[in-house]
Amino acid sequence: MRSGITLTLPVALMAAIAGPARAQDHPPGEQGSRNVHVLSHVPLGRLFTVGDIEAEQELSRPYVYVPRMQGTTRSTGFSIVSVKDPSKARLLFTWTMEKPELLRAYGGLQGKYFKLKGRYYYAQSFQILKGSPNEEVGAIVFDVTGLPDTTTIREVRRLRVPANPGGIHNLFTYKHSDGRVLLFTTSTGPFTSVWDLDRFVSGAEDQGFVARIPIPETTAPAAAAPRAGTQNTTGTYHDFYVGYDPATHQDKFYGAAWSAGYFVFDVTRPEEPKLITSITGVAGGASYHTFTPTPDGRYAVGEMEYVYSPLRIYDLKPGLSGEVKTISRPIGAWTSNWRNLPHNHEVRWPYVFVSGYEDGMHVFNMMDPTNPYTVGYYDTYDGPRKRGWGGVDRPEEGTGNANGAFGVEVRNADGMIFVSDMSTGLWVLKMDGFDGWNGHQWGMPNVSSVQDWDNGPEGAPKPQKVS
Image (cartoon, rainbow, N blue to C red; front, side, top):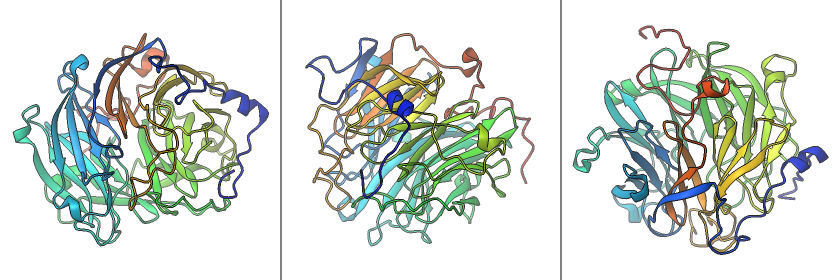
């Protein structure tokens, strides 16, 4: 029970979420399964200063980016770690926004890299509250082409969103089937904004603005208000994923709207987004957080950000085929420990890699979406329970489960797993038998959050010049 909302799941579904009782329940020295190995650990400072994680995918560019939150220090910015030798990862560089002592901010939460015209860039989101310096700055793009020479890192431009103060919580860089490199960003308004990064980097007066993807009107029951100190208000998108569907030849946007539901849009022409289907009215539905499809777009994994909530697995086919107006029931669910909550995740069919806050990193198999099961784990967090993030005004007051493993990233080329932990820093992990991922090896499209910046989505028509 949370804020008047009861989680009710079918008996078969409750059976499906059974998992090992983890979080501090393991004996000392046995915090991981025997098939998951620690290659490196890089502490990054005080607790609550580490945000999400992003890794470049080319083996010739072994760089991992870690956003830095305000936490218990004034550290809004990002760090770069070299994993050239995965067994000896090392901190290369840290950038901190000017006048950090004056900021009221969550800080740097999500970052994504992209490649454009032969150069490499890193876009870092910032969520800075109204009344602070740089309150209109939602993201900053840096040129990181010259790495590992950190003296060549150059700030290119700041994405400013004065009409929607409060910054950008999440962003996603995407190589569109029409050839454009696009940036999708959250907002404090009821929409996601889309930007053309070529035009942005080139100095376009409108910052390369392309379109807005709205939160559709929904008749779903109103969700409970988020807990005090939460990073998003109701009526906003919290997170999203964008991918190409070779079967339908569509670019698709999968958005988690904090208090409304999950929504799938056709963004083949992003200037005219078209709603395809939705997930609303889910039992126990509140704080829709993250929404990630399988490579073929048939199933999707959804997170709801409250304690005791498992990751739910949905079959999108009834909605995509028009059989139902909206989907309201999951077909499966998974959690590592019912007392806690899983957070962000990456899908590499049939595996799902999860950063599970106090439970560390887990991997589960969803080949049978109705019966997912754990195949490996490593607990990156060894602190006390219920000492999580207390909010932007009191981060030192641990009041919840938002601590531990924040983000997870998978490098497709060699199967390396990178985890950012809010208290313990960066971890480089390897799972036996997972030496890389290509969807074709599993009879799936080769589609994931990883982008082919040079060639665009696999199966997409040859891009035409966009006027």
